[in-house]
Image (cartoon, rainbow, N blue to C red; front, side, top):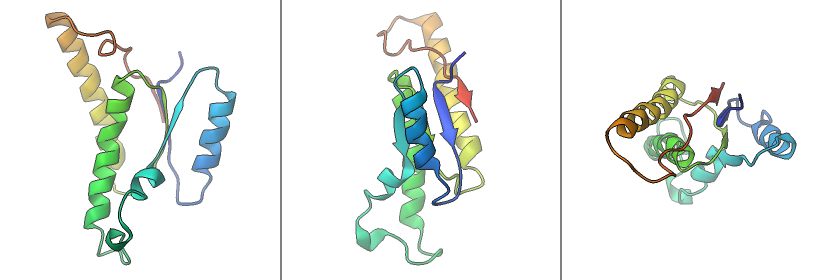
Amino acid sequence: MHPDIIWLNGASSSGKTTLAKELQRLLDDQFMHVCFDAFYQMLPAQFKPLTADDSRYVEKVHLGFEYAIPALARAGNRLIVDYPFHYPDSLPRCLELVSERTRARRSKDRTSSFSSVDRSREFRIRC
């Protein structure tokens, strides 16, 4: 069984991106590298925090990133997620979001028909 989502967690500059690129090269299927740094770079410079107390915008970026992962996977993408779980509840929330999508899809499968993209396989996760 191959995972649909591979989560890479580590401190800044610990090699997550390097490992993700190497995994993309070695794996026998297409995996999309989804990197939190790309989301963070979407913030205008004046909203990037200078101190730990000034992080309200970054918290929103973290939440947006976490909610984007199941959406990308639901569309049929296999993912390598490069994400420093910065907040204590980040990993449990990410796993719950992914499993919520799986439960909702199973329930919807039983009650109605919908597009083949929505019927993508159940998420398999490697942590």
